[in-house]
Amino acid sequence: MNSDIGGNDFIDPEAPGHSDATSPLATAQQRVALMIRNFEDPSQEWRRLCAELLGTFFLVLVAAGGPMIDHSIPGSVGRAAAVVAPGLMVMSIILFMGKVSGAHLNPAVSIAFWLRRDFPGRRVPAYLAVQLAGALLAAWFLEAVIHVSASYGSSYPAASHTPLDAFLLETVLTLGLVSVILGTASGAQQVGLFGAIGVGGYIALAGLWASPISGASMNPARTLGPDLVSRDLTSWWVYLAAPLLGAVLAVGVAFLLRGPGGGKTGSLAAQGSINPLINRPDQA
Image (cartoon, rainbow, N blue to C red; front, side, top):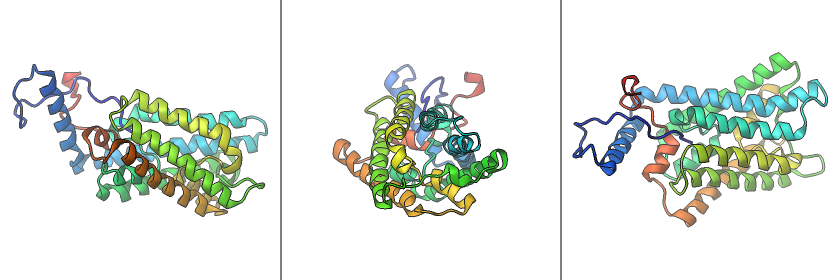
């Protein structure tokens, strides 16, 4: 999700529709026009993909690293810390790189933004690929440093519950997560700081009560990365299918609550707003 929209943006006086730079409405419209033009600039895509890879790497580093460290040093990382840490990490990532890529960090989020018409479909495969790559790199790094299997950092149904129980719970959890993301990106709330707090807070709260049953993954990359590195694919389908179904349901809920997507604010939140004409060094 995008953050920090606005600031000392450079306004091109030759831009189409430029009339009165002193008009707040005209200035805001020109800023949005510059940002939207940038969405279609292929020269910036490598930055967005690097941001998604790095962001997903740090998310999985924290989400999988907590339980792996606790297995290596028993009692060192409690359950509360292990589930709150990913929420705080997501909050930080949205704030520091949301403007670059939109900070999806999750294949379910990228697909939801696409279904909502806030994100172009041609960019979805690359986003999914680098999100999985970031998760794999994090799992490999953790195994090398902590010296325990990445399987201890993955998500599994509790022994007392069936994979179907975990599937249903992960579906509902992801429905809530993606609903929060789409809602804070819709213009109903401020994009940026409030979005980071809302998304990070939801991840932490979901983990605090639901992690004993399903792990509260809500993210295919977060779980499949450690699964693939450890070659332990136990109940892998739960953590692929449930988040995708939850994302689709969340798009339906967003349509019921706010109508069709594809608006300017949602697109800014989903796609990032890097542009050589925005926040130029000589305008800072």
